[in-house]
Image (tube, rainbow, N blue to C red; front, side, top):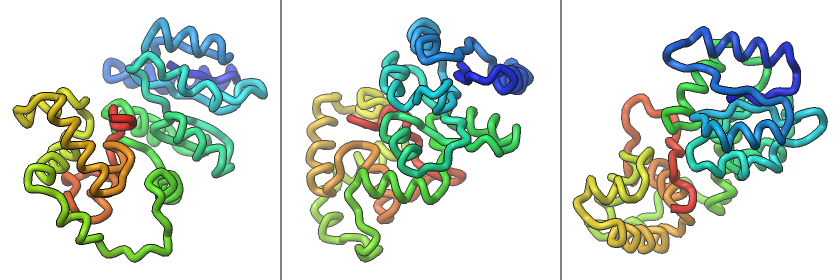
Length: 231
């Protein structure tokens, strides 16, 4: 679904996306926040490509509600460069940020990545947002905190590896792959979060990759953010 208040830009984006059929298609458009909220609820699109400014109204305030259907993922396409505004959009659920000077090819590539559960952020945004989320300070030594790693049991290390490898899966799907119950998985995850001092699965993913606890799969450029937050 495309959310953009400028008719020419909206037409251009729709033409661009529909040219990729059958791989992707536009299921709906919106030019106001009310239209966007109604469309997200009714259509449950896989990806919502939206501008942050709709006629002077900030869509950042509506992002959590836009994503309330549990299916849609938000990709921001904006002319804004204010890091505070962009970081707020990420904290409220945006999976990626594109600036309007990007190429058409980058727009299509970003939509495809967001659909696969990946992220589309530049390095500065990643450092700011995930550093804030995990409470890290740039002054900290980059060496892995071995004492935290040593506190993990072999089973917990296996769970970290599985959760990272299958980061696009919900908890019950990860539990099935490990042949344990979802309740047991949640208990293990709670213990892991406490030992690594991270808030959730997204925090665990970023921690594990950054500190070498788990190696990313070949070709991965960043954490796939599918259903990670809050689990």
